[in-house]
Structure formats: C-alpha cells, structure tokens
Amino acid sequence: PHILLMKSKKVCTCMVSFRRWIKWSLLGLVALCVAGFVALYTLSTWSAEPTNECDVRFDNGVVLSDVPAAQTRPQQIKGLSKQTKVDKGMLFAWDAAEPRTFWMHDTWAPLSVGFFSDEGVLFSIEMMSPNTDIHHDSVNPARFALELPQGRFEQLNLKPGSKVTHMACRLIN
Image (cartoon, rainbow, N blue to C red; front, top):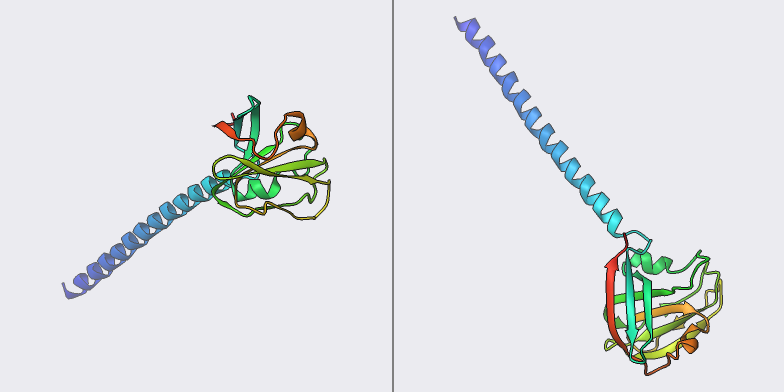
C-alpha cells in the first residue's frame, strides 16, 4: 500500500503541473492575442494616409470641400509628398497652437502653406518650391495649417486676416 500511495502522489503532482502549464499557456495565448489586436489598432490609427476629409468655410464665403486632413504624426510627416494630385490641398491640425515648420522634401508640386491661429485666423502664407528641404516656419504659434497649390490662396482671396468660420471633418469611407 505504501508503494501505491507514492505512485498516486507522483500522478497527482504531474497532473497539477500539467494543469498549471495549461493555465499559463492559455493566459499567454490570450495575452498574445490582446497584444496583436492592440498592434493592429495602433497601426490602423497611425497610418500615413489621411483617414479624414474636412470642409472648411471662410469668412469671405469660400468653402473648400473634401480637403484631406493630416491629424496623426505619420500623416503630417508624409503630407503631400510623392503625390501628383494636390489640387484639394491638405489640412494639418494639432491639439494646441505651437510654432510649426514645413518643408517640401519629395513633394513634386509647388505649394503654399497658410498658418492659422488657435482662433482660426490666417496669419501667414509661405510659398514653397518643389522638392526642397528649405524650412518654412509659422513664426507665430499655429493650430492649423493648410497646404494648397501655389496661387490658390490668391485665387480664393484668402490672405492674412481671413478667418475660418466653420470646419466639419468626417471619416473617409
């Protein structure tokens, strides 16, 4: 009977170890799945392609429709670089007004960038030459910036002092 008792203790010990292994393996698998979903979500929200378009209305009645919005850091870094169609321009938006810098590395079309205050007032327009690394600074803190093909600000009669009166953004399908 003493020998049988020893064998059953070994069997019990093995079963407990096996159950622990199963438990920790399942927990590890769940953790791996959660990490995978978090990684996929992060990649989708940090895409370099714009995921929003905005309609922007100005105090002179001009409305720009379906302007791609660069709201994440990767979208802002990419901007309109390596694009051949820039006719809609691009809106850049940040949570707070700060001095901003733009450049035209790998950007093939001449653009202008307009810098807007926290209140939506256009305070500066900079002309930018294609495919250069020249820095174009906002000088004052900017909450928004709008890149348009060169000459478009003038065509739309948008100049320093013009104000955004309404902006509505939506997800791109």
